[in-house]
Length: 281
Ligand code: NAP
Image (tube, rainbow, N blue to C red; front, side):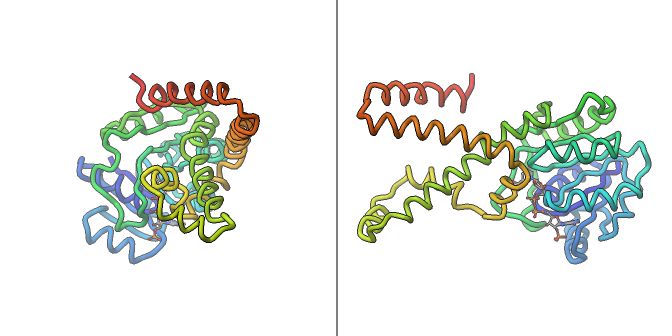
């Protein structure tokens, strides 16, 4: 199959490596000529260009640019394609992506491989990045079944586990498990840095161990990614932050009221819920 990849970075480059190793022909488009040249030189793609006209030959086109470039890219891409070309994407947010692209391209299937690293760009691309990961696919009632089947098979060929879901449900779910944790963890770091006493702050730093390291990790990552989550999944992130604030207020009131029984009940519930949520049987 001829697969076009637009955006040769961590995700696009990793998809290209795996699909090419399975015998597909990979056509790559990226923003910088130096990235296109590197992708060819390293055998990641068969051909590459900064010109989206290269995608005219592809049977499937995968959008792998940052989310902010999706819509201008689609505007320029679609006139080059024949109607049967299947277009999919790997964006971390699905609601507005599907709403914006599906009405313009019948054979569009939203997708989101739940894999990544802290790195970015073509140099970060890896073999086998998607092995054993969940690959979410978000077709609508109008998505042609052939397009869904082709994208499903391509995802499975990466040894990923395909999971189909509604685009809006996807966004609410990733708000809980990915986007909210970044905001909560960032708030933890900021609150700690706000400690008025320099002595206490310094002592906290000295005493901090694995618990603080774990809970502060995702809040100490790349700010661009956090902004991307909030900007492109705003409604679901606001909804999950409001839910979190309610829980925090409930805990605060319980502690202020010295209601230790209630606090124990609450923490007992979360102690039971966590293993069942994180490692379901
Ligand atoms: P990335 O490493 O920064 O790769 C994106 C690449 O796209 C850039 O390296 C850039 O390459 C190229 N690019 C930028 N603007 C472009 C444009 N207008 N036209 C063509 N190419 C362009 O980012 P990524 O982490 O792979 O993320 C890409 C997509 O995957 C995003 O939509 C993100 O939501 C999704 N995603 C990310 C992860 C993750 O953990 N990182 C996980 C799942 C899904 P050059 O400038 O070098 O040409």
